[in-house]
Length: 455
Image 1 (cartoon, rainbow, N blue to C red):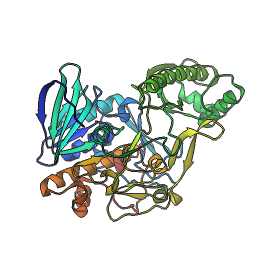
Image 2: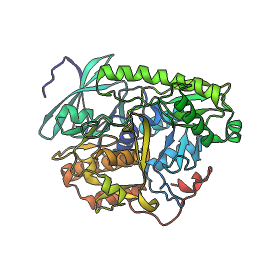
Image 3: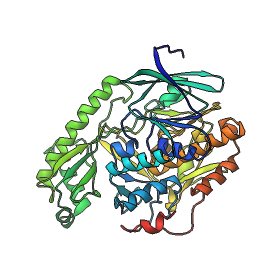
């Protein structure tokens, strides 16, 4: 593709990471362990992506079972350790089937990501959007836009696409599947937070079970125009505050500007429908109010790149292991979509016996590409497998694998798909990653992270 705007500045780097979500920030941090110049570009004014824009809980660190095991380590541990030292995490029990979650203060996490990235000497560009790509041999020239300086370019030898929407792959002409082409796409969610919640009163009245019963009753009787009959509201690090995953917007394409605009409007409308419902129907919420909405509506899937390997539902549900696996996942398939009757609900399917599957290196290497990796929710997976492997502990794990792979590729002058996988696995283990299911059962009590996240 040719793109010829007036260019204000031209920069060069060795490894370019596009998108500073949990995958991209982890990729940049891992890549900074080499001797190469690393640049990270982000369209918002802060890092973290989904981890700071809309959510407050890391899932995927533990297998969801009666005997949970910790299956993620390395850079993800460094992030949680810093949050822990500042008093900004607690462990949420396995209440929604996805395993114990690491709840955190998302505002503090922005600073944690900032600090980690800055101390590693990574060049950061916030408020910057990718608008075009040109490739010449092994070199990529990416065109970006910043409202202050207009268009500028970054020339890179290696690129890690962590944009979520596979924006780099799209502009570079790398093949992908669009969500909705084969199966119904996952829905969109605006998260919201409420303050002045009396959690003790809520729990005494029945807690989660009571909430679900009240939601189902309101949905059935249409006393409140709720978009779904099930949803979650959970305690936050901040006292008397809760966060939700309740809003559900369907049948709108997040890659279409008109649809995305309407999705944002609909998500906000639903949030305040839920506020009215909580205040009038749920004990402990009588004086509660919304204090914040997610920075944008949450998008679960858009483009999924075709990689050297494509993770499948069968791989997940058979707890398959691979010789080239780069991390583990035990999360269930959690598919937020419309049912055949038109209702908006969530469908679950679990890895048998509380196990975990391996994720192979080929899922983060776009097919036939020599200098590119794709990590985060745009990695190579089918719809069902993606619905399992999109937890943030796993996207951080993808990122750290891609960052280390980029170092190896640069140092050995090997293409992305041809690097020595054993060298990569050794580097991951040295960093603290977990590549084999451990025997030890993890402590997932509310204050159990001191043992789980030691460096």
